[in-house]
Length: 61
Image 1 (cartoon, helix red, strand yellow):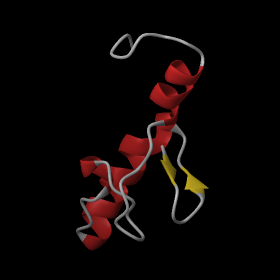
Image 2 (tube, rainbow, N blue to C red; image 1 turned 180 degrees about the horizontal axis):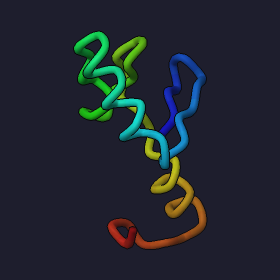
Image 3 (spheres, rainbow, N blue to C red; image 1 turned 90 degrees about the vertical axis):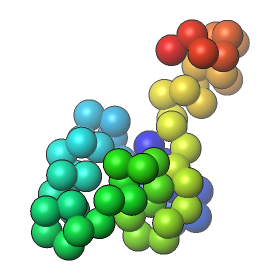
Image 4 (cartoon, rainbow, N blue to C red; image 1 turned 135 degrees about the vertical axis):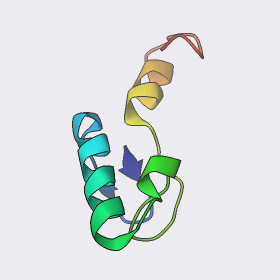
């Protein structure tokens, strides 16, 4: 996942872990909604974006 406003990435493997930590420590649920927990911008799913860029049909992943 990537935030185009903050220019930061979160490895897909760590999204759930980080989301759980944020929810339990500060009550922040933005990450589990696909939003940047810092600025609230919609995150870009880098795995899906890579599939589209490489010609995979939409919805294939």
